[in-house]
Image (cartoon, rainbow, N blue to C red):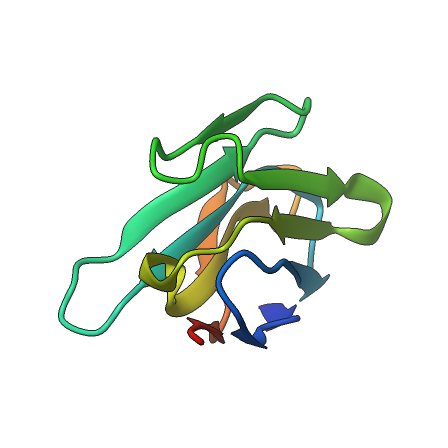
Length: 121
């Protein structure tokens, strides 16, 4: 029905940068918020950043000033620019979106499969 596919993860040294992308496809009428979460081994899933349809954003305290979330509404895509990466940023990063599939339906949450980000020297 709706698919979210992340890309851009990988290995980077501390202090480096990565840019994650997430593209939504399928039966999409509109997308409200889009979010990035992360989950490290043995830890709870953590909300990293959120961007609303109008462009408003919010970030976890742990990434403020280092990460920037953006979106391209025409392409149903969301991005996460990650700078000054630290080893504690190592996690699987997951894309989440609140999607309306028709103009009479309410929004539902859809998730991507995740992309691994590893920060180490």
